[in-house]
Image 1: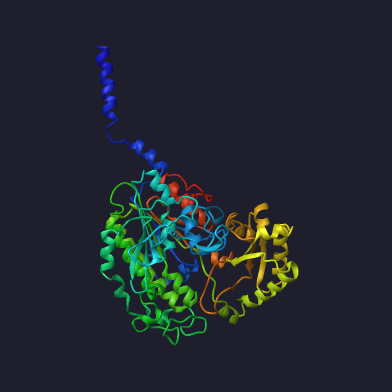
Image 2: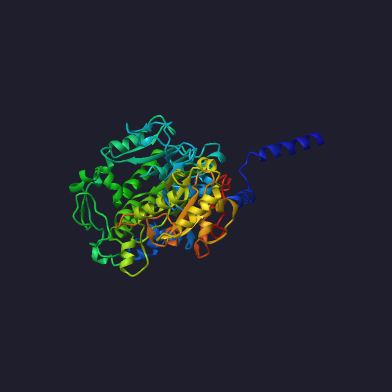
Length: 552
């Protein structure tokens, strides 16, 4: 009888282990992390925080406003390093760390080992897929750590699907990480197709080939006029002014921009990148990816990384105070609404998680600021170069101590310095003291300072977070506020100042509490926040922290 009783207990235990988890067990699991069917990371290239507030009254209820009103807003979110540019920005968002750790110190940089300039996503070991051009020879190999998308793939034994896409190759390759199923970017010019690299695949999947065959870009070969009455765009400057660049073939930087008439003057499909239609085309492709890759259709979390790049092209061309930038954001708001509605329908309302941020901000056109009596200007690069050559010749003779100048940094030839029985740190210091005498230069930091000091606040902290000991230069320049190396029209970015570091950060969807914070958050906090929500490992170089207020 006792034996039968024991067997009955064992049988009951075995059968019970096959039953669904109890509500208590489910509650315990949910306390460790949420399980959205899809995570969507949205990066808007060159979006200043004040674009969210400045154009607010023009936005509809289904895009930016939906995310703000229904999700969580970090109002004081910043980049904590410089240079603030596209490659480092996308890498930092997805790795949870800064260039000092992930290694993407610029869009391009001088590589000390190979003695050449390298691009942050280039990789000649791979072939282009979808084009005969070299524009597909890309991979994430320059990024030395994992991304949040990599960690999701590792956590699920590669059952999660990761797809990344952007007009810019670096806006797709870096967010996709090392383990993405696919990354796609737009090849303009005569082709107007979405392409990839053999790093990811041997051929484009059918849904991408079908999208390219549909000539989706052709429908945007039309006049770009303002979506609303231009007289209502009172949040921006005048339409015709001296601070904006021109499309090839145009006499003035004013609406409407007749794209068919200037198509051939602007590399055909490439012109779409510099208009809001490039963002719309990106949204079209993202919706096709949802269907084609069946993202979010099961209980294993997938990841879609989308970067809207046209905002950056428009900002560089026309400036942050232009009617063009305002119209671009009003139209982008509609594209965001399209995307969110598609997620509701295809994945299910409440079953997905979205974050939205930017890879950097932008400075107002210095010429415009000067006319408003605000200190600003442009570096006299020629004059600086001439004076600097005189100093180097007088101090060090004919010795060629400079290997390269790029990304506002001087790279020295350490072998030559040692052969002259000089000390590297002393040469760095001497050059730094000379450069501080030049107009337009605010501060100078040396590699020796970066290695031997630990800065915790202010500009030095930001510069140090952008300094990578193996890849960065020996003497790093910081220009005066609103002083730039740039043509006299349009906006740019890259500095450690707040106009370049302050960007939006919105969270929306499953596992997100509603509300906002004015406490300082940093761009490197995004990846650990998403990892905490998912209950997975942080990217392996993470230096940021989860944002506690975001967690529901």
